[in-house]
Amino acid sequence: MKIHPKVLTAFVGYLKNSGHGINEKNGCLVMRRGVKDAIIDCRVEENITVNDYGYRLYMTFMHRWLNEGKRFLSKMQQLGLMIVSRVKGRNYIDC
Image 1: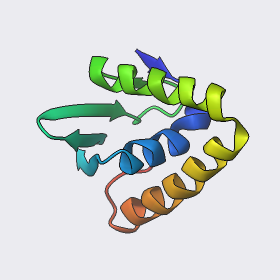
Image 2 (image 1 turned 180 degrees about the vertical axis):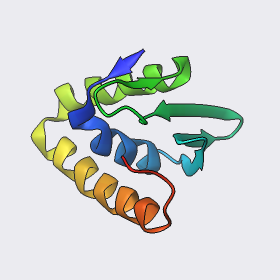
Image 3 (image 1 turned 90 degrees about the vertical axis):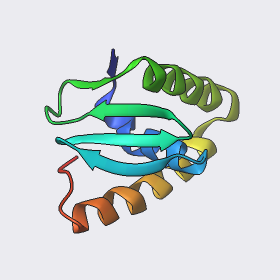
Image 4 (image 1 turned 180 degrees about the horizontal axis):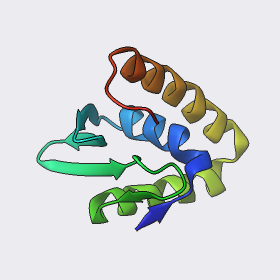
């Protein structure tokens, strides 16, 4: 299932904020919480895909955005930018 590339950073921030750890595996972001993994394949920037668990989290993220508005998205975007820049600094991914 696909997610929109413009909200990827905010979505990563949302996952981190909800207690998911971040790792990289074969060019994909792996966000783990407990025994469940949200796998985000962002090797092709125009075609970002996620697994079923990740898509359910994405839909929850989108509903929260609709309910809480622009302030929520802005907060998650800022958090996501910090996380992605740290991951890029460790040369994990190029998202």
